[in-house]
Amino acid sequence: MKLYDGGRAPNPRRVRIFLAEKGLSVPLEQVDIGKFEHKTAEFTAKNPMQGIPVLELDDGTLISESVAICRYFEELHPAPPLFGTGALERAAVEMWNRRLDLGLYSSIAAVFRHSHPAMAEREVPQVPDWAAANRDKVIHFLRILDAQLARHTFVTGETYTVADITALVAIDFMKLPRLTIPEDCSNIVRWHALVSSRASAVA
Amino acid sequence: MKLYDGGRAPNPRRVRIFLAEKGLSVPLEQVDIGKFEHKTAEFTAKNPMQGIPVLELDDGTLISESVAICRYFEELHPAPPLFGTGALERAAVEMWNRRLDLGLYSSIAAVFRHSHPAMAEREVPQVPDWAAANRDKVIHFLRILDAQLARHTFVTGETYTVADITALVAIDFMKLPRLTIPEDCSNIVRWHALVSSRASAVA
Image (cartoon, rainbow over all chains, first blue to last red; front, side, top):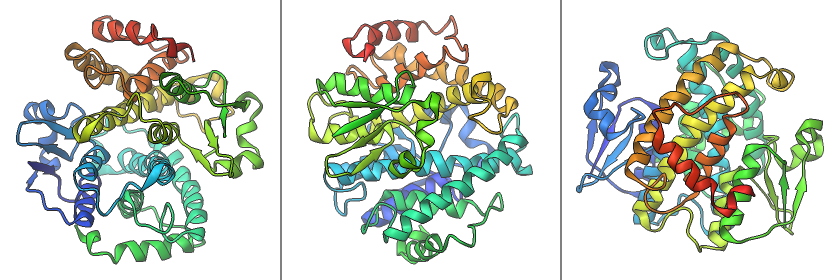
């Protein structure tokens, strides 16, 4: 198998961190977004959404969407469990992973795509008012996350899960559109230092 | 347990269809979005995202996010499997469910929330340019979905899964912002008639 990766882009990092936490190594092939390699006909045939990462198996089967790739590896290599153990924990991981994806990651991406000059020829049309609206959504969500991290070591409880990976990658992605963690969110700051200190964080 | 439900809103319908496919019945408690009951302090304590549905267990445990609630019931009642069987099928269901959520459902919701007069006091600020941009995104995604349904009976293959539920609810949700399936998407029309004819569709 091989993983179509994309250097500094946030979604490929989610899968690299996940693999590092599992102790797995997969051959990487770089897709240069800067050169629009993800928009070629050849790559679009692999993923019609034109996104990275994409996992290609030896028989040619293609899996895209970061969380789907992570879930595939979770099924093949259940230990350590990163999607939770048992019905209730798995539901909590799914709940927080979706809240983070839909309520934080998507909003940060919206600010970046709709306000950053570098994105002008990629996000057509750029909608500056949508970027502005999402700045507020990011801050609103961070306060919800901070309240959760006031009660728990990690996002879903006392165990590191894929939801921590989503949150870490999202929060590090905030740098690009110059978003910052509000000063009163001390629990996020505590948690961010903790998850950033794991060996997987540099993957 | 009880499920906080919301009448005609699309997300609660996802869970109701899922439960009907499983042959399960859960007591429902209506939350009237029209009266902003999902924004009360009492309900916000149950789900800080102020969304429905929410599942409350007898011990007070709360699960929100439609897909998380569905996954909880999948764990408790694995048959019939609606999230796939085996690593590869589960990855495909996750992949399509996310594509549908992020590439279709979210875009339809954006058109509705940012263009419909009824949403003016709920989506603040409404960004009409964002609604317009998403009309194009919806049509673009429907062509990708149509190509998939040209090759398969259901969204992820020959078996009905939670991805079909997400697609059905999303496409039915298109009526509100007056979006229509392009005439050349005949495979979606064929599939839509098929999944709408299941007993679960009226749930």
